[in-house]
Amino acid sequence: MIKLGVIADDFTGATDIASFLVNNGLPTVQLNGVPPSDFKVETQAVVISLKSRSCPAQQAVADSLKALTWLQQQGCQQFYFKYCSTFDSTAKGNIGPVTDALLAQLGETQTIISPALPVNGRTVYQGYLFVMDQLLSESGMRHHPVTPMTDSNLMRVMEQQAAGRCGLVPYNVMDQGAEAVKQRLAALKEQGMRYVVLDTLNERHLLTQGEALRDMKLVTGGSGLAIGLARQWAGSTAQNGSATEAGRPQSGAGVVLSGSCSVMTNKQVARYLKQAAGRAIDVARCLDGAQPSYVQELVDWVKAHRNDALAPLLYATSSPDQLAQIQQRWGAEASSQAVEKLFAAVASQLQQDGFQRFIIAGGETSSIVVQMLGIHAFHIGPSISPGVPWVRSTNHPLSLALKSGNFGDEDFFARAQKEFAA
Image 1: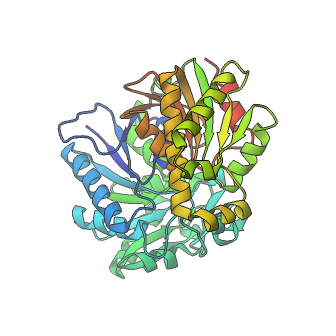
Image 2: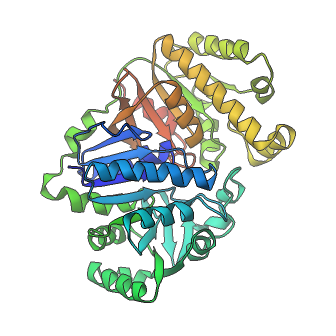
């Protein structure tokens, strides 16, 4: 029976939380999209990855409810709506509308908001979300091309998006332990607080949350909350060692594809260009009618570097100023979709040419590439960085590392290959 069912709003976010579940003792399978109703899986936790972070709210709600229905049909005991640790959303959603819809289908009247991931510098203090030592609104997320985060107050952001009121469990209550948190949640529920932000400054707070929320039907958060919940559900049956072995990367030719324009990915690309062959994507050529010839040109270039010590890099990563110029000239949606489709076409051709290892930066890029490669589900392997594991397709001889934009250290691309050489 599935103990914990996770509905993740993007592909890299799904592998992020799946990694934390496995590393904390809970065997996990990640599914790419909602499977047919008769699809069966034998595991303790399932993560369903959607592409619902930045699509229209109505579509995000419909997709999330479809995922919830499938999990309910499998007899799942607890449900977890997973979003990014930087609470990526707009004033209208999609976190609020999806949360409201899930609560309604489950017949519940309260849930929690816990995006924190202290190991990656995401903490919550007095309801404000921090990225390292900066407020979210002062970090690189304020320049996000799709979901710019200009308000760090999670209670305010949630109330703008959703249909109810939002309260807070402050850090001093969190320090008192699980029972104190439960009492605070009950008191806020009596006051009509539909959502409750949880202050989180360290991993001890995440463990407290796992204990306090063990019986809450629906929880919402980033991947950090999974640490505490996984340990509660796994108990003495923890088997993370054997679980990660199934997803260990295999040998074979590889490529790095970077579509993210986040601050960290910019640093990672700059570092990797000093170590390996790299080629920038020409957005203009993505948009013109000769894209098939451009795809073949890029594929040929990658194949020419097939035997390099480190995999070649194709990147559309650019600085905020460069990104602004690109979007002004060609439009934000048109340019990003063109680049993503280009990466997907390149990856598909490389797969046919025998490439078996793909390192991909960016949630949207990862999503479309995985779909193009025809991957239905993943085994979760060892972590390269917190929240970024190697994964192995269950239906193709392919290994992938799907990295959310701001995750990983500056040497991530090289470490992923050197530390996990087959």
